[in-house]
Image 1 (tube, rainbow, N blue to C red):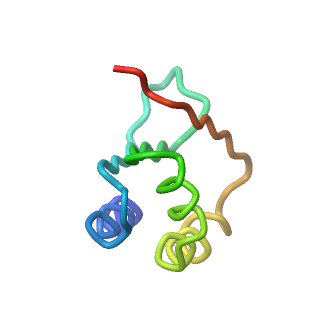
Image 2: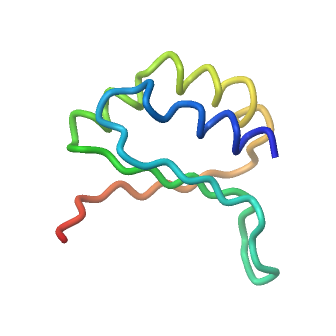
Length: 79
């Protein structure tokens, strides 16, 4: 799937992005067809990613035009 490749290509190009995973093969019980999981060093890195021209170029061309609904959950991982 091309969206998986495009989002994975962002790894190493955006400071503070420590993990990126794209799931596009949901179970039949799912109510979404794509999941983008990202992990960052801190909240500032998340904000930089959200504003990144690289991230937005992929999202604007290959995701947003085809998105009917979107859900987002940002949180601080306390491990």
